Length: 273
Image (cartoon, rainbow, N blue to C red; front, top):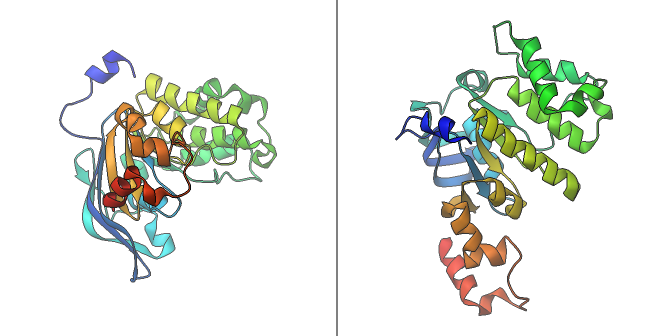
């Protein structure tokens, strides 16, 4: 993000704030337990944790998609630009400026690239859709070259299309769920370079859920570690990268051991929960 763009951001109000959120599915299964986090305007924030920690549920709570899976927020509130959005429907939240790039891309395989991009602008009522499609093609030249049925795109190209579709909504905040899923290491690097470029050049705020902790912390300014529906650790990306527990359990830098139970970092991590 440029210094000029950073200076233009109003101080004191985060783009997004979750305050003591509980989420329950089917009236009985509690997935989030008093979860709180904030995403400063214009930054990339990483949300890390193992499978089943509740990361995707957190994104669905923000984007208003819990109802499609019989989930609901039972306590707490979510604020975007200082306004409460928890309990609002997904279309209202998209219009407010939040767009989610779902895990697995979720592009429409039997529609063209351009038709998929137009779907991202379905809540807009202005006349700038064609110009924005050209802007997406400028960021992703391969999509212009491959503007046929989206089902014939490679995994990396489909991820580019999913991000491009999000940009068509002119979002203030993009929620990204596992953008590296199923991609080769080379394509992972390319996708993360694109994420950093969009944040830097467009000033788009990004909340990034990602299993690849090393890549996520490399792109983010700060991050949260989530386990069993709770935030157990947070800090700047640099602080988390240097944290001994994060190194051992998420960055693969610990020494080989037969049992975690015999080491101090396991005992520290156990106290997170």
